[in-house]
Image (cartoon, rainbow over all chains, first blue to last red; front, top):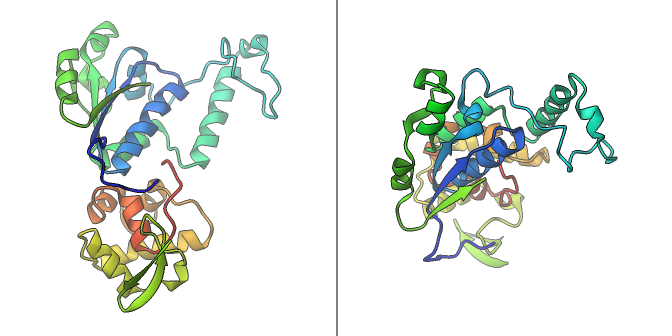
Amino acid sequence: MAEKENSHKIKKVCIICAKGAIEDVYASLVMANGAVMEGMEAKLFFTFFGMDAITKKRMNNLHTATVGNPAMRMPGGLPFPSLMGMLPGVEAGVSSMMKKQMDALDMPPVDEFLDMITAGGGEVYACKLAADMFKLKKEDLSDHVIDIITVGDFYELAAGEGSQIIFT
Amino acid sequence: MAQKTIAGQTIEVTEDGYLVDASQWNEEIAKELAKEEDIELTDAHFQVLNFIRETHEKGETLTIRKVGKSGKTDIKGFYQLFPGGPLKKASRIAGIPKPTSCV
């Protein structure tokens, strides 16, 4: 695509991450990183189970669901039996395999990804309601989290011309 | 495709302004291309540009992360050297094709 002057250019993206599975979190991280790479402003807002992605203890230990995930396949493409997904260790194994494949494509672990995004000027925020609900304090969260904010604060951050809110 | 005279040399560029033939590149061309982006190239820039060209020659996909691990600069430094779209701008100035990576 040609880089044309466009009066409707996206200047800022505000991305809401509300889920904590690997693919949900990485969708948000890739979108945010992609925005800063293009020279846009990017704000990440983590809420509900998405809080796992910025919780120090959990952020590098995210899993994908091997049960109830119809898109899950065996390596080679055969369907992944749900019963197998229930076996102990399978979810951890599949998740670690997925992370290895992503790493090979230069999708880093969550903490390093947040380093990358913030190095480019992206900002990370946590949801106050979710922090209260999960009894998380600022010190439980990644040092990249600028603040724990309300929904109202988030909308204030999102204000401005050429700004988009993305819910992954 | 278009032709463009940069630093006294006629070179072919894509419609996004990337060099068609990376082998036509030289430091003078880099300086001219950088000026278009309002960047004054220093040694620090050239270290990164050379790394980018080497990565391209090896046929590897260039990513922000790779540049960050290159030892030439860190990611923050990369954003400071080529503000507002480091991977694209650095690739263009380095004379390699437009990056195809999403990370």
